[in-house]
Image 1 (tube, rainbow, N blue to C red):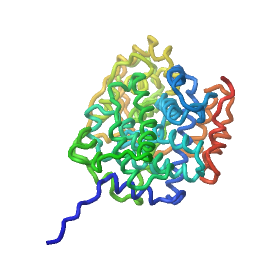
Image 2 (cartoon, helix red, strand yellow):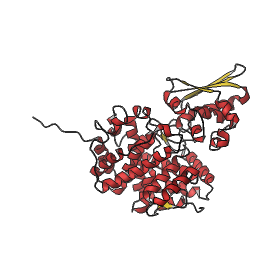
Image 3 (tube, rainbow, N blue to C red):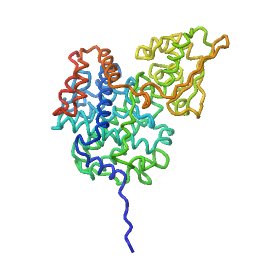
Image 4 (cartoon, rainbow, N blue to C red):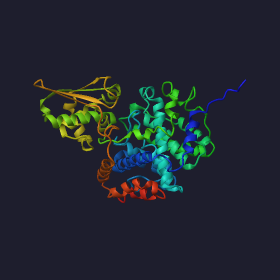
Length: 453
């Protein structure tokens, strides 16, 4: 009788693939997309480096920091690797201006880039190693998200935090030089820390979940390096993370076509600082306002139609600027009131203005399952009975209408200018584009250090 072979755990299959990938050996288009992701990430982190939420994180963590060896992007202080990873994730995600893998609604870069860059600052690692580690971490993060998408998010798990920790562990373990066995253990250790809930998205508690994803993944890799182990089926076992946090896991979404199907190539970038599923609404309203020159005072009501995810994420009361970034109602109001949806339209004085409150009150949301994820229909009904309607299937910044390299560069320049710390945006931009040819990350990280305390 032939012995029955036990198939390897999904985490070991992933670990074998990651550890078997040489620095710089990924397809050129994948490495280029990784650079686009990093460029968008650095710009977002610099732009809010001295915002109150980031200031609070720095103030709370500083008394407990170890050696001050790692850069806080856009700031003048230095923290230890774990704390710097936490803060640099918070700042990158604060404006909801970061990249998005639309199928999972994961923001891939924020929890993965910070630990990779931190390790690159204190270990003899080339730019190609760091870039490859980031790309691999973001890829596995999105694949794990694909594996649990649906039931996971519906249960209230914040998928960027819960899956981001795996991306952080993969990138960190790759750079530390873990063996496949130890990298699989790092993923299992990450599973014990995976957390973050959707209910907290409009509050600072969201930032804690995001920061912990970056820090926890690095910590998981360090524990694995030191000999800690984890159950082989910690992720995909009968009592593992995937089943505890969702429905029956789709294992092939994680391990299928490794090295040939790249989720990172489906990454998208935001022209608006709002939840990605709001972008089609914003595009539609800007289009209607321009084409028909609709006076706000003539509007009787506005109906927004979209899929279940759009309504679940955006049909909410607006009590602050965080709510506004993921609000169907404010995504309508801002374009009609101010012909734009940018950082200025999310300031408290505009979000809570009488005119914004009044127009948001005229907006209703309806579910339409015939519209694909990421799409929206907006119908404007005027008091005289006139109706204007448009449907946007693919928003600006989506895979179908991607932002160009030049548009991402301009976004970074505007965010660096907003920070007001005198940093040279072109130096940051060239540091990212040249990363795979650089001896390390020193030049890039130095370009993000503020000289203004």
